[in-house]
Image (cartoon, rainbow, N blue to C red; front, side):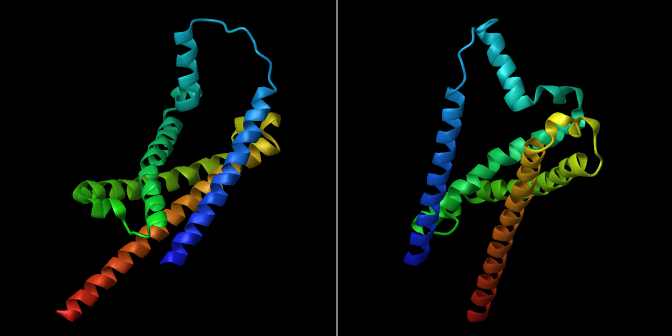
Length: 189
């Protein structure tokens, strides 16, 4: 058990270090920019920023795409609960910490919601990938999106699929292990 905790801790520290280096590089790039005078009211600027960052302003004219993005956002937020649990379990050597912490049916609801959202996100990811690469929608074939922007979008979609597969694998393995434990308990009675 200690070996798995040490290995998990080392991999986590390496990941955090890599992430911190990347964030530092991004901050340095941002700081290369020049200050420009701000126009308009502060409230209007905040509204625009929130619409662009979270609402993807253009999507309000495309409801289907807006729903697909909304599924992504909600799945991302809720999946963070499971990610927190993975870190707690990894650092402590426990298993399903929140379940044993007395969250009971609420925990089962959250895990089930993650499963449903993961299926929906998987479908949305396949739709996004096909829109970008198979259907050749005109706005995705513009010259500005060639090279890194196209690769970046495809990498994000690929990593999304991998994340979903990892979640399914983890939860399926956990259910299988739980099922085996129940069978062993029944045999022992």
